[in-house]
Length: 151
Image (tube, rainbow, N blue to C red; front, side, top):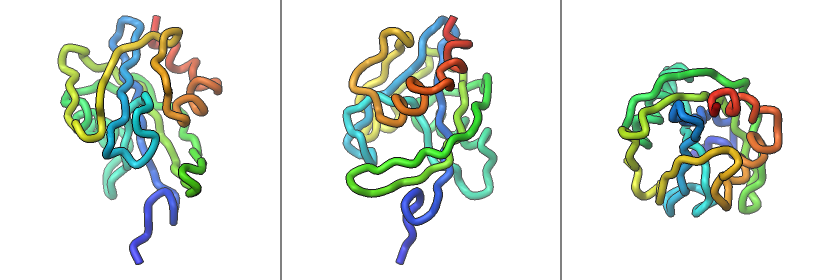
């Protein structure tokens, strides 16, 4: 039987928070091919591949999802993201990165997973937000990291 990452064993993911250098963060609306929370706004991310560093992985994910290069500004403390989605308990070790991208270079590369993208300030975030974004960014002290780069 094939084991499922994040369900049968802990998965490792890198999430990224794209900044434009002018006080806005990029979020995307999850498309029909996403594993959960379709139609909700979220930051980007993806699974760490065997043999790659988190830094390499996050830069690869930005390129795959948004078609652009990114500069890592800061690595956030890792968190254990444990949730129940559709009656299934999931567990991921999430390594967050704040990255800077050129907004003119950003485009949707995974059209089945991303329905829309937009640049937002923290006081004007779109709705509905992904539950993990609300739980691990908005409701915790991690938001202080984003605020540092949104001035």
